[in-house]
Image 1 (cartoon, one colour):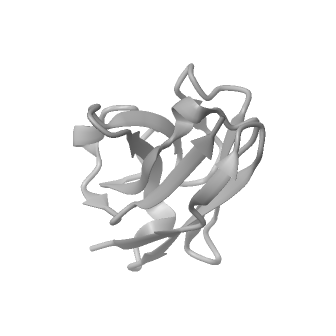
Image 2 (cartoon, rainbow, N blue to C red; image 1 turned 30 degrees about the vertical axis):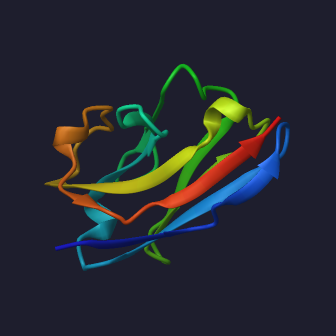
Length: 126
């Protein structure tokens, strides 16, 4: 079992930066692929980024590639999403997710993730 709590969201202007954190509890965190997803008002949830259990493999949506960076600190049971050059279209609720299977490769498929956080709001004004 893994419980996830996101933090770091906020309101900022376009071009700014923000770092989201996702604190996990549960002894299997260090073995889990972790992902970030987002959902904008009136839209479906979409994949943002994922990272393998070791941090050695990462995967990004084309819309954020080169601007966002996912990382993790297994000693702190935390995964991060560094977001730079933010755009108004990045406005959404951002969710952290964990794949309950051990040592899988990062994936953009939301059904592969078994545990989800409550989300943190990111609002980017133009």
